[in-house]
Image (cartoon, rainbow, N blue to C red; front, top):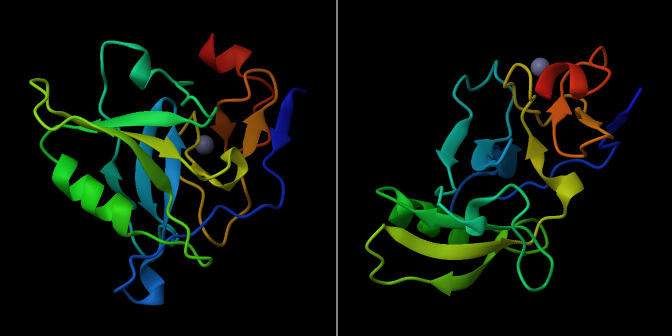
Amino acid sequence: MISESTAHVPFRLFSPPDVQAGAAVALGRNHASWFLVLARPEELCPSRPIFCLNFALPDDRSAFDARSAGGKHVFAVGGAMSDDIMDHLTALLDQEGCAPVNVVEVYPNNPFYLRALVEVLVPDRELMYACARCGKWETQLGPRFMRCGGCRRRCYCSTKVRSCVQLCS
Ligand SMILES: [Zn+2]
């Protein structure tokens, strides 16, 4: 038994300043990818991820555990949707008025459409996770998923999964 729950800490909700309370989103992780995901359950909104946020690069800046100098997760934003993604990310605020990310570096004329490197300000436990087996996202009303205590990376919606080894090795 090597799974542990992200416990009773809820994932952190963010809202654009000009939008009604029902449209809260969370910063989500599915394997090495980062997403902006609607917090409401599937029954209310079937298509929950709004954007895949990160841009894969052929170097360490897009690795699963890429970190900033300050030790925080970092990911690269780029590609055709990068203007939209940056507009969303920089407009979101939580209940205390804090943003989900901090822009570490911008790349104005990058030939590979790399736009910016951002640092994640949300603690790991307050991110929303997708189940590494079925892809379902955590919801605002449901229980937090169990995290594999071995790799400490993948989360599962079912407690029947005992370890990542049987699924992910
Ligand atoms: Zn699942």
